Image (cartoon, rainbow, N blue to C red; front, side, top):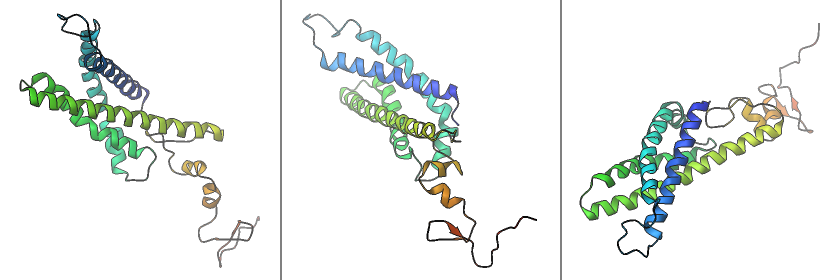
Length: 202
């Protein structure tokens, strides 16, 4: 499972970067000022930018911290797992989001800088949405496990593993409990396969 430290780092850094980015974008692009000599639209605008730029390396570290144990491990397991689609959406935005975040600060050409800003904004919004959906999927699975009244072993995405996954799918556990080669009876119970005799007590 994903460790508590990894969860705190990833969730905390994402909240800081996304929150400061949204507030800064709102102040810079949506607010106006009546002061003709002002260089910012709000007194807190430089502080929001400082927080955004300072928290970004923490997010890069957190994503690198979980890259092998969580991201690459689940990519290798194939499709069909809970949370895979939302995870892929978030992961696909990481590289362009990080790259344009640095390019905005070094580009001197206004066209290139403006293009980097729009790509950074778009990938940042999609990453945040994918991340929130990914966390929501994991929490829905956790709530389903609590409703079962018994702990279910999970992998680091929150998906049930092994036989525990059968408990999350209605009817799956009953089918899994039948001996191999058995056929369903009229009441839904399994008949032993031909040539298979049930064990008798000695």
